[in-house]
Amino acid sequence: MHKRLLIPGPTEVSAKMLFEQTRFLIGHRTKEFTELYTAIIAKLNRFFQQPSDYKATITTSSGTLWFDIVGRNIVKEKALVCANGAFSKRFGTAIQDCGKEVDFLEVEWGKAVKPHMIAEKLGSGEYDTLGICHNETSTGVRNPIYKIGEMVRKDYPDVMLAIDSISGMAGDKVLPSKIGCDVIFASTQKCFALPPGLAVGLVSDRALERAREVPNRGLYTNLVRIFDYYERKHQTPFTPNISLLYALDKRMDLLLEETHEGVYQRHKAMAEYTQKWAKKHFALFAEPGYESVTVTCIKNTLGKSVKELNKKLEERHFMISNGYGKLAEQTFRIGHMGEWDLAGIKEAIWHIDEIWGLGK
Ligand SMILES: Cc1ncc(COP(=O)(O)O)c(C=O)c1O
Image (cartoon, rainbow, N blue to C red; front, side):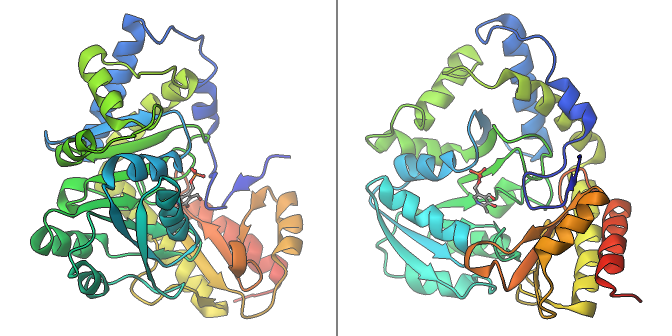
């Protein structure tokens, strides 16, 4: 039975996007592929309003590959990683697994990381990279990356800023050159509203220069190889997921048509509606003022069974998510991202109200 996914990834994929992937394959060393790939890169650069010293690329992987890419290409010796949820913690441990040193700036789950907390740590001068998660999908917290970026660029210009925006990009407002970040990345199964299998990375020239100085970049994770290959051949160094690229090409057309600001406003409207409803009946897990616009994490103050709810929602063709990891019992999450719109969210919440008897 088709359940429309209101989980925070993979999100609902439209029939049109699914259909795009059924086209016949082309060789990835052909002119046709070059045309397809360069067109998508140009569309990504346009959508994210990238100046010439920022470049887009696409890896055939889920987003987590970019934890390794940062660990192997950007961190020279030691990184500071802000951990205020499950994914940001994983970002740091992944960098450690790449053989680099990591100090964690641990912040209580549900709270945001503030610039002054980071400044206190960076002041020691021992870090060459700062890693942070923009949109903590496990807690529904949106960290203030513009303010953080401004502080880092002004006071610690040599520190590379690497951001996991896996559940933020293409939903929230993410303009890398305005943030002042060096690497930012996302997976296609989130706000890009496509199946999992590709990750989009936006990289500054500074970051690429840094990568050239860092040894042991690996093979599949080697940013220099990825960008040099593109420069020379306008293709990917290894066989990409061509079927998904067909869909991403069309999805970028939709995003460009809606505009970056339009996409953000649609997500904001969905978040505001969901969060108003959540506050009326439950409470939000995120610190006030730092609520995500793509996923709402709700404290389950009424002790409702999300498993039972999902069984009933399934008959109505919807599915939401329970809490993540250690928050599984305490919270539940509604992902309002990708191609969802306010009408769809209102409809889903109407069904939840009816099943749980929350009424007016
Ligand atoms: C913030 C964040 N980081 C990392 C990941 C892992 O991404 P992927 O499953 O695409 O590797 C997720 C997935 O939910 C996420 O939400």
